[in-house]
Image (cartoon, rainbow over all chains, first blue to last red; front, side):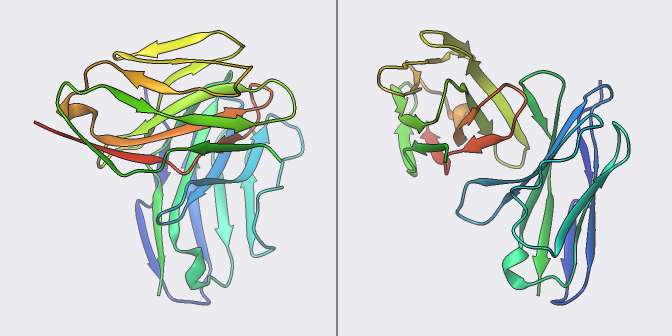
Length: 111
Length: 112
């Protein structure tokens, strides 16, 4: 079946611009996660959605970052007024039980 | 807070060599433990997992045993192949469906 998909695969933007990253989870997966992987570092948790519960936003690094999820489907991660330190690969994962399935990621470059 | 510490490498081995990647964790409670692998040009994928003490996860010739007494989940393979060249991440999750906490990853290169 189809895996987790993310778009765009690459995004280059100028400092100060807003960007939106999209994640399409595996159908039927109630949980959805966003992580960030900066060069030479491990993956950092950003935000977690579980069904209709309030999302766990504890990993968002600043108020420039926000995310939404429509029901149990698509999620968008928005970064406002991008900064160079936002350059990273943004990974989305979805899960039904304790195993998370990752998408291919969006590589964001802020010039 | 909860954390994972793993060997960072990079590590280069010859084909058929024995591989151990150390991973230890700090957690309040009893986490589920995971090894994820990222092959060149591909997304992150689950390699194996263990959900309670003394469980052994295994897949593709890799094994890891959940050791509560040493808070460890070391990854081993008896004979690596060139196709095992990848970045390996150790991770924990506190209640099954919660966020993953990752180690920094270790890049492995296997030469023929």
